[in-house]
Each structure stands twice: as structure tokens, then as C-alpha cells.
Image (spheres, rainbow, N blue to C red):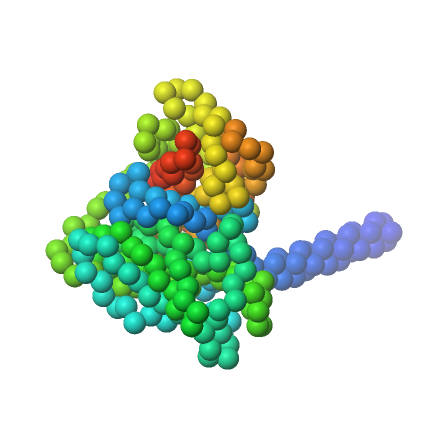
Length: 307
């Protein structure tokens, strides 16, 4: 009986120790999850569209793009790098130029940027109701001033995202996303966010999401492209991938870039496109998928609910 009692005590002690170890590992994992560079670069489009419809230009990634400010891209500074712009308001109804500069920890304009999906800077504009998506590749002058040529904007509050990787200094090789807001004066007509769905239409193409990512977890996501009920297999390479996928969170416009994992093997991409998805927050996300066929860039918008 004494031996049995000793065995019981020892077993309880081991169980308690195991619980303590598991708790410690859990706390350590939580403490390390706030990595602001966990999402490299939302994909980029060379054609901009100010239309709030699902057919406006879109983008997001062979290399999941960057997530700054705790994985949201909602700050104008990170790790000593800062986005500044003289533009606080832009006129509605006409194309507009948004000028900005990225300064480094030394306070000087950054002029050395690494190529990310064939571009040194990816620029995104989206209104507060997640309409009017534009994906642009701006041009930099020798003094480090960038100019993004925007299509006409509708009245409201817009957030301008910059996605880049410094090629020198303390942030060399680090993917960053910084953003600022601008106001477009006029009568604001808010557009309700389309209900969550697994399919969307754009230019006669049907986009279908075949998987459901979970908030705060790395998760594979597959998107399929079809037309007239038939699988599409003639997707052309676009920014070193077959499709670019970008996501914005309803309510705060938090940014996420979903990294494509499908290898490019010529002008025969599709119908299934694989992405590495990391959406940090639960709720509705507005996804914009950009893909190219016959030399034309298409953009499809879809609302995805993430639990």
C-alpha cells in the first residue's frame, strides 16, 4: 500500500510539472507572435482603378507582403523609417498625384530599395469603406521623392499604403508597410461591404476561394479561376507570379499581403492558385485578386469572413 501511495504522489508531481512546462511554452509563443515583419509585400498592379466595384485593380504575392505596426500597416513609421507627404487632401473626380518620401533612422530620404516582385515600391490606395482599390508602382526622383499617379478618387477618407524593402542601412532586407490618410472633399456616399462569399465575378471570370483561413494562424489558401464554367489555364506571369492577392480588414483598413506559392512555368497558369495566408484578426476581409490574360490585367474583389 505504501508503494502504491508513493507511485500516486510521483505521478501527480510529474503531471504538475508537465502542466507548468506547457504553460511556459504557451506564454513564450504568445510573446513572440508580435513580429511586425511577418507579412512581406502585398502584390502590386501596374494599372490603377478608382472604381468601387469588384472589377477594380487588385493585388498580393510570391512572398507574403509586409505587415507593419503589429501586422496592420496602419502606422506611418516603423523601426526608424517614416512615411511623410505634403498631401493631406486631394481633389475628387480627376486623376491626382500623391507625392511622398520614405526617410530612414538617420532622418534622410531613403533612395536605395530592393526589388520586390519586380518593383522597388508597391503603392495601394483604398477608401475607408474598402472601395476604389488602386495598386500602383510609383516613380522615384533622385532626391527620394516618390510620385504615385492616382486615378480619380471619390469623396471620403482614403488610406495610402507603401510597401517596400530598404536595400541599405539598418533596415536592409526588412519588408515594411507604412501608410497615411488623405481626405477627398465632397458628398460622401458610403458603399456597404458586400456580404461574405466564396465566389466573385470580374471581366467574365469567376474567382472561387476553396479554403478558409483562421485568424492569427499561417494557413494555405487556394483560389481557382474559371470562365464560362471551364477552368482557366492561360494565366500569364504577373510580377513574377500568376496572381497577386491583397486583403484589407473591415473597420480599420488593416493591410495583409498573401504570399503566392504557385511556381511560374510559362503562359499556362491556373486554374488553381496557392497562397500562404496570415490574416491576424478575425472578421471580414476584403480580398483583391489581380491576374493577367491576353496581356490584360483583371481585378476581382471578394469579402472573406475569417474566424
